[in-house]
Length: 106
Image (cartoon, rainbow, N blue to C red; front, top):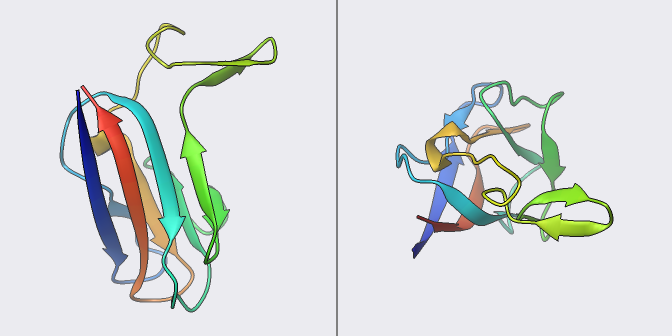
């Protein structure tokens, strides 16, 4: 198990950027909008866009660490599934805005 951190630049708004090419299983991840971004940034799977994805605006962040099931959070692996870091993408409303991440992977 290891911690990976990074920053992704969305060079062209409306064109998703892959979070990482690392094909490791994600146990936990936090996305953060970068202070100084002009507008919202979004994260999600390959379908992410300004209309399909979780929006963040500085100084917001969002953690993903499981699936909600009967009022408790369970790790993805315990719930029978997982996601690879390479399956996550970002998009932005404005060219050059960034999203940061911290991920615990195996």
